[in-house]
Length: 452
Ligand code: TYD
Ligand code: MG
Image 1: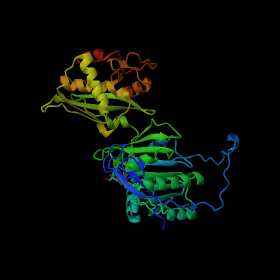
Image 2 (image 1 turned 180 degrees about the vertical axis):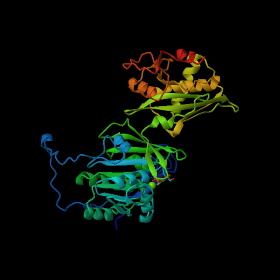
Image 3 (image 1 turned 45 degrees about the horizontal axis):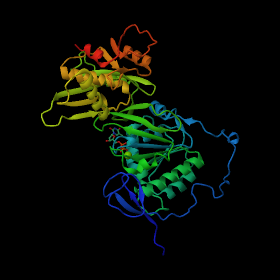
Image 4 (image 1 turned 180 degrees about the horizontal axis):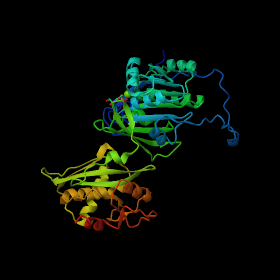
């Protein structure tokens, strides 16, 4: 018998090697390279008809776009928005996230409310467990959802052939197992094989497929990462498990923007959409505490207000600590350097902790100004006051740079009852709000003067 063909894969980044070695030269991790058997056979896809049509090139204008089915809208407004308007027929969507963040709950809620025939395949939970979860999260008992607990892709495809679903959800790609490969489920070669079988199925049958993939905090479990270039849409479901809020973002979307942010709250009855984020993300105190500043940010098309909290204290131990949740720590270092150099605040010997409320990660650079104000407010023990908010990017020379969608930011702040908003001098504002006072500043010094 011929020796089975094997390759060595790094379990961290997915790089393949022909020989074993102690350290992966691609990601510099030790002891991550594992041998996997890849005895590939040529098997006919089970869900397809035996006589598949002959492959040939075709003129672009001759492509039949009639059955280019429309998008299937889900019942979740947030989910549709992040996808760019619903699920596109024949697309493969990867939903990644840490274990326990709520991926199964999110997709089961989608499956239960779809008007089309939906097949929910689980390799992780029993039928009984899925039923229990479904009863917990659903409101109406009517549903087109079918459940199949199986991990063998060949068995799944023969089942799919008989029930012909219009949407397939796979929970999770790490539990899937294809007989064409001898490696164990969850290994790199098995994930790659199963993913390509699902993509092949989706494209040939024009059925959308949603794959769940587990990712650790560093995002470097190789499995889902190596699939990112193969699928059409990569969604990331994030959130601190100890917080209520969850965010859904598109990292790649062949059919829409990647700027949208979906917000959810994990409650007793499953995930609830947050349609008015500003109201839940800022505290209701009349007087804000020292070290708190509010920013008007825009994620995708939606503006909302968010609270930045900073704590500055004298470092007791040798090296001062800098820690940040929800805000890039490198950017925090940059802002601190700007504060030292341009405004002369001595922060080098201080511990600085920064927190964006709600456990939400903010990518909008317009939050910079609020970050700086929160830090100074804590350092100087000055209260900013709850009627002020900020929107401006801070540049390396201390200038406050303009940010896009400024009118939306101003309107949102006005709607929530703020009396003053600080913006860059270089922003042109076309609206003339009545209830909010606009203060335009050109650099940090000007903004800081306001504190005193
Ligand atoms: P789950 O969807 O199982 O996470 P994942 O599939 O990403 O691993 O969600 C698990 C968490 O969600 C669990 O810790 C409990 C919580 N949860 C609720 O708080 N309320 C609910 O109604 C449900 C179904 C789950
Ligand atoms: Mg799960």
